[in-house]
Amino acid sequence: MSPSRNESPEAHEERGEENGARHPQESNGVGFNSRPTQNGRETALLARDATNSLAVIGDLDDTDIVLLLTPLVPQVSGDPDDTSDPFECFGRALESRHHRIRHRPYENSSGITGTTRQFIRQSNVIILVLANSDAAGQTPQINVEHAHVTVATAGDDKRVIIVVVDSSSESWRRLDDFPTVIQAADYSRASLERAVSVIFREF
Image (cartoon, rainbow, N blue to C red; front, top):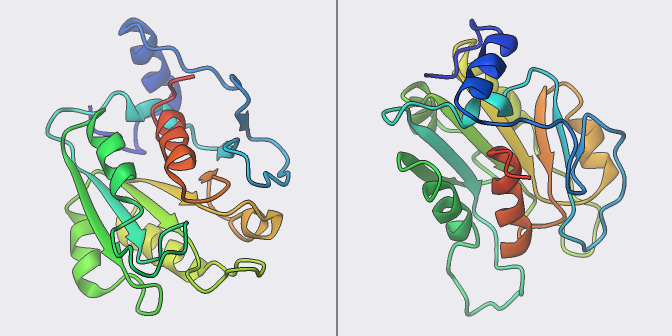
């Protein structure tokens, strides 16, 4: 079933229970709808899901498209010779749960372009990752405008999940206007794979 906002969360929850899916609100060290705290360098994370969007992700049809939008950033290691995409493992982890994943990187400077907006309109669920490639040793300054553009383009019939990959309480606060947000400590493989587990409520 496509995750339309027009269907009530209760209906999705009920169908999930019938299918044997369990959707706990708090489990395994993940704080749902809780006050933000500093995560430090741990792989623990926070999640807010005011509209119960995560409860419908495990109920996707095989034909539903999940679009993953990730910023172009350097590797966590800081190795200048490593030009691989640090979010490739994130896309693969998502694909192991749902086979129709479209992964499209974007430039932080140019943001969500017209071409990217076309991909958003063609998708059922959008996972937007926010990170600041220039924040080494500083308080990250994520570009919330990317989130506003993504949500506005998606409209009311698509689910948008925002994953912010830094542990600052400031980044969490700046995303107060968005109902479904996951905050990971960073974009290391461990943090990203844990975020995928939260998206699919495997805890």
